[in-house]
Length: 135
Image 1 (cartoon, rainbow, N blue to C red):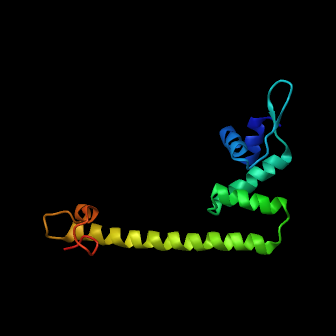
Image 2: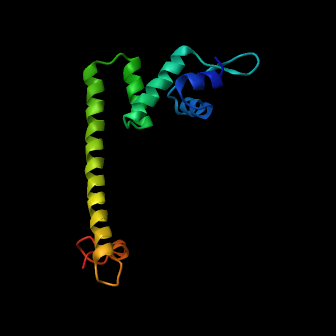
Image 3: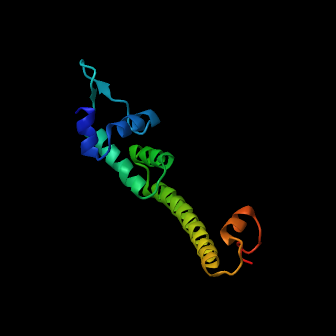
């Protein structure tokens, strides 16, 4: 199938298909005599796989590893190990985001309710104050 139809079937745009080819996530497609790219149903399935993995937060490098494991019919323990590593990374990012949210809540509250003429947000970003910028 041509690139536009394949992209629609996979739920992406044609540029995404080309990018996945460049990254080596899907195999390079053959071209018809007319020069059009000719995608297979399997390539569309792989693109859907990639998109679902990205929806779970896997990076394209991690998706590449998952695709290698898929192609090798690797034992589920190998896939689980990769997923567990990804889960640990997500947990770390969630904790980091929670700390950032709490610090920003504190600073915006101090900005709104403080009596100091200086902006605690700007002071915090400049490195003044060791407790997140509050005085």
